[in-house]
Length: 364
Image: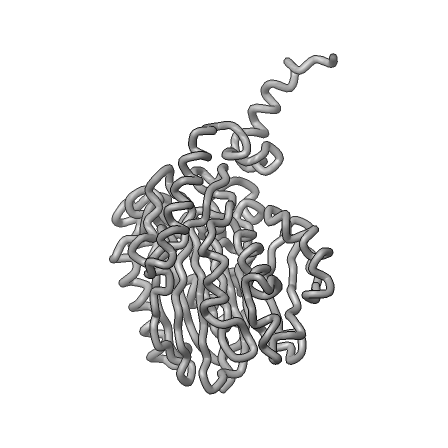
């Protein structure tokens, strides 16, 4: 069965502040997608939240970048924004950067991860959703999952994975893309994906079969809006088992906190804390950045799940380490490396202050 899995997210209003999503907003989204399912547009759907981000998880047979599916998501976000405005939620409609739908939501604010594939006899999917961070946050985990044998032993001992994977990397600033083969081009690839502010892993493919293994959202809100309007809060879909890494290999990178940018006002570095669904409520300094993992089985396009994969004491140490890192970084206050470098704060007040003070700078 040919399936398209679409995960489209947006911040339509925070409850309270930027911490979480109001139940009425989630209910409105469910009603919208239920109508679409009843009309045959969707095979199935699941509505979730990660922090203040509304997550629309949908299966259908329309293919990627389909106008009907994207319009459904946009209209759902607009309806949910109206609920947020009525409740006077914080930043209502924050990620909706256009006045009207124009065929595709990719350049309109919402984050999008999609993949088209033939459903296997047992189709295992892990969907990662993050809050208070940027689109390059998946670079390190995806590298570990699909290219690091110390993380993924299947790369060494599984015959159907031993040939490796191909990474599609996007230059989000230059609007270009490049493909890298792992393991032979790992060193070249790391030159770029080690700078997640500019380069983001968009997708990963099985090298021999060409089948898609992972897809992430790479939309950069500040580049779209031309100003700071909130963090990208990306999503990522990863197929598991068989010729792809096992679920445990996919989760393993999150057993050690990754340092990402975002956190308070999108202007700080902080630890990416792997949490259960009920812990995805960013409160301390509007953070620290959070990631949840929803596990599903697909059965003829219908969701079986989700399984809350980080709701496991095996990740307690990672959460403790994340809190310790957060404590250390917070002591630095407005100093780097807690605060982002000035060249990464071009969408904050920094350019205005630099312009104002320019006459006071004298040659030495």
